[in-house]
Image (cartoon, rainbow, N blue to C red):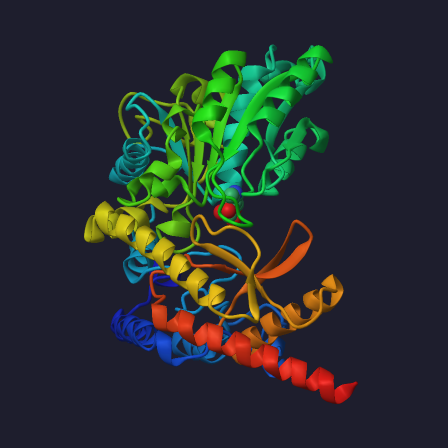
Length: 488
Ligand SMILES: *Cc1c(COP(=O)(O)O)cnc(C)c1O
């Protein structure tokens, strides 16, 4: 009878073993030759068509499935594991992290909670982040999918603590006063999204002007707080950004902490880019004051190069964190013994079932040591300074924002001051570099000036990559000028 019962396990493991070994060999070859390939390439139509076929109702050999991926997936990646990828703000991954994801899936635990070693390990990773960020052992935290969710968790706790009522029972409609969150006008868009989702609305976020170094204007912050108090709005939270996404600017965290303390306001640090500076020996002073925060969001999938996804939020007050999210159905009552005993991780965020993303962080931190990750952060900042010098040495190139971290904003300038023409030429340079596979910069606009943006958050980048990149930018700009001269 039992012969008629099916399982997903193969009857004979031997072919699976062979194929899995091949996959590992291929993966190592893929990383070992990462420099030899272009950064990115457009997908041909037949590749796109591949992902439009109906659900496979019957089986096929795993070997054939894998072959499909080798042909149609791996050559058409985003490119952020490549040494000349500096677009937006990514991490570049690492092989140990990839093994961690594989082993986590094999181990298979649900990290919602339970009495497993995986839960111990997850808690240990959060404890390490508390230690590294200067939070006390009594603090709390949780791993999230990324920085957006880390900030959202923190804002939920801040909202509930600052509301003046029991928001969980009565909802935001019962709040006696509207709440206000403050951040600089350089704040990441995820904060608005979080406040919208939390029912507070986009207008609950006051954007404080930034100065000419893109740091929050502290006097303007204080003024906005006083005006809100006078108008009957309750100042709830100041978000200090440790490393803005546009330019890598760092708000004055000590000054923000002082204001928050004086007015009894929640102090949150968005450290998705910069919190990890605390482990960088040469640059840790840049985030002085972060340890005074009530909550910190950080992003291991950025400067720790954890393969996506991995974010983390820390909360100074473990009780407030727990009281915001704790919830158990009859079907999930905790015990003091057995499989469901112990701390329940689902009580610290929105998700119940959770993946074992801690393992990939844990393995690569153990293997390399925190100090090495710190040195890699310093290295990226020094590379940014090097690139800034390269840009400054070229009369055709112009730095658009002060370089304080690992982000360089600059543009190609021809003989015009016409912003629209400059936008057009720099956009074209960016797209040509991306499409050629030479490099992936992105772009942004700072104080009305459109520019190329290079965020060096990449442990594979070398200075020679930056030399090559500048050569290509100049070559491309010269081409475009020639083309314009011939065309008109
Ligand atoms: C990247 C980033 C975020 C969002 O993080 P995700 O991991 O992409 O969700 C938030 N804030 C800042 C400053 C960021 O750079």
